[in-house]
Image 1 (spheres, one colour):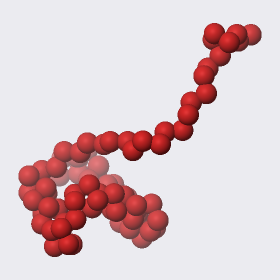
Image 2 (tube, rainbow, N blue to C red; image 1 turned 30 degrees about the vertical axis):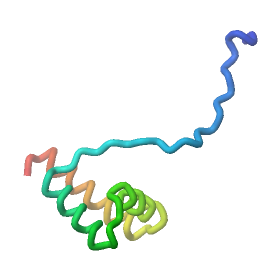
Image 3 (spheres, one colour; image 1 turned 90 degrees about the vertical axis):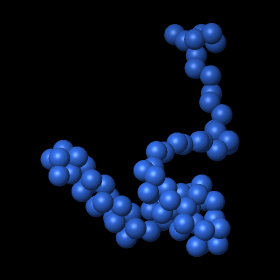
Length: 80
């Protein structure tokens, strides 16, 4: 039997944004930075947020990303 001392405390839902970190190749960073500038001077974080939202709401975009990821995984496994 759980007592007040051992019972898990309820966890409040997180409301603060969660930070992620990604490493980009220098050329990829430059390409995305240029793209953001051409898109009206958007911040890179906003570009990433919109791209993530797109794959969550657009099945065609999501499938394109899934296919690219599968190809990348296959390339890594086979060394091609």
